[in-house]
Amino acid sequence: RVTANGAPQRTGFIPEIQGLRTVALLLVAVYHIWFDRVSGGVDVFLLVSAYLMTRSLTGRAERGERTNPLAFAVQKFARLLPAAAVTTALVLVAVALLFPATMWRDHVVDAVASLTYTENLRLQQAGTDYFATNDALASPFQHFWSLSIQGQVFVMWALVHAGAELAARAARIPVRRVLLGVFGVVLAASLAWSIVLTAADQTFAYFDTWARLWEFAAGSLLALVQHWIRLPAALRAALGWTGVAGILACGWVLPVESSFPG
Image (cartoon, rainbow, N blue to C red; front, side):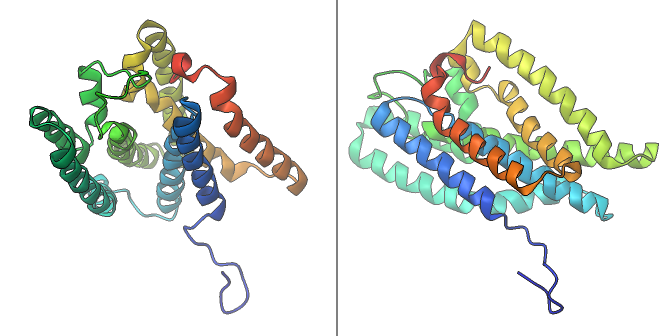
């Protein structure tokens, strides 16, 4: 888009990000359906969601707008919940039609957990093995685990940004530098925990919010440092296609079933 005087107009829409999300979504479907493997595509979604959130909130903070965690959460979930509620309702109808009555109660509990963004915690408590070869007993709500973690992080990240803005004003230093320090610590601590927990109990670690925070922190750090990065167009293109190749190959080259999220 351009303004009336022909200058580029900044918008919140980034076509490359939508393309990346499409690639990740196709990877999840293709690997699950045809290869019975995990692609790592969900991890792309986690990183991208934090990248966009930090990019937006930091930009607003630098323009003098304060982050209101409550308003942010209300706005975010008001956009997400309607579609999630419709999906949940339709799945419950399918459960009533296709599953025996003895299983209804567990699926209703799963539905509530999905709508309250706690499905990953329920799967942890149930000892669910995401990589189990027998899917006969798998919950139809199982794939809400990643959305649940994202919902939890939306709240946490809004609080982190609000706290960093207060600290930056008190110390009279740029908020971007405060956030770099905070998310750097989060990445290091979460990655260390993720490696340890994955080695001890990979099934439990797969659904663990704290073991996933490093992926979100990586996205936030990218959003923060991108502000200072200037690369030639040819190098940007080469790095971009290298990244796409890495994403496509990730689930095939890496033993995701034993190494993720650590």
